[in-house]
Image 1 (cartoon, rainbow, N blue to C red):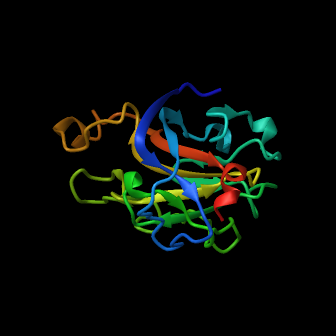
Image 2 (tube, rainbow, N blue to C red):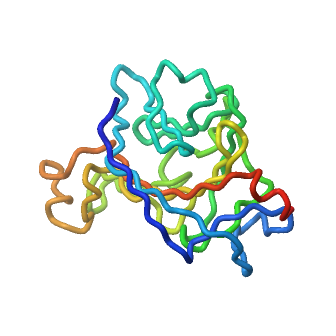
Length: 212
């Protein structure tokens, strides 16, 4: 198993609900209803040893063994900059994902429609600079760096189909370093890549069906 840490932060003002009468485009609500916890995962190893993805359950907050990759136990799988969800060509689950151009703290509703599955044509969380969750700096400073796109929130349906979650990727580098420093700009002193820091909040769909 990879070495990483996870912390739970209770934030009373941060909410995530699912309701059929929500705005399925923005995911922003003016009527907060339910409190949730925010989980912080640090240094999740996605280096892809032997070409394998690292699997993670948002429901349990634990890494899932590769031997269970053909089950619905996992929700996301990461290797390098590629993120899979448990659905379509990637897994047997009922997962789905969409990206909102809304800050994480402002996403209070999990949209009721618009979730994509992984397919041969495109992944639910698209790959490539500027297409999904990150930009590649190329020759700009800091050179050849992977930086999360600000104010992009990934909203997911879990592999078991019974939960919605929102997720924000904070860093692609070990220790979640300050990307504005000279140390980070220098590729020789930059912390190791493919060690994700991300936060997420999750809520069970069944608890909210009476709001639909």
